[in-house]
Length: 252
Image 1 (cartoon, one colour):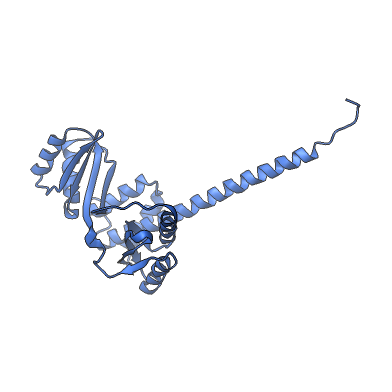
Image 2 (cartoon, rainbow, N blue to C red; image 1 turned 90 degrees about the vertical axis):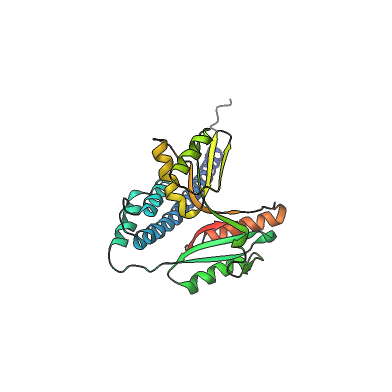
């Protein structure tokens, strides 16, 4: 008002600081996403390689590989990552990955199964043991924890005609453990060996069917609730395991 010139430098500096903080947050989010993608791609590369190596590198002749490719695509794994893993398996030599399973008791006494693919057992057990030790968890003997889980194939999709679904499965001679109809969705539980037979029967009976869940997994026979420090420690435990490159699946 008195004709003097005001300086807006302090305001501009605050603006720069604010923008800097926003950039740092975005940069952190970008790097976090990149790290998660890298872990995801590495996981599928190993699984695809093993599926193709143990069978044949042909989607039509290898249902296990075909199912894995479909799953990878649903999780937005790039085609070049998928193709490279399959092509690698088609060649001679390459890595010699072996499946390894660890069982134990996590924070709060939660039962945990950790499935890995490794080309170095010494490295893998060292990393897994470190995750258990640093969170007060305990590794257990082979078979002592897995007995508290049901190993099943699970297929789930939107629908309500449970009777027609059962007819299709029985007509295909699929051994069905259980069929659950709830909230407009049907979920089928079958033995792991029946997975592809059940999936084929469903797709042939219901053309265009979209499966929301199609996986072979371990389902706990009972559950417990963690809270407070136990829950925080358990989440840290899972985070540490997920950071191990050799870890493929965690069931708890």
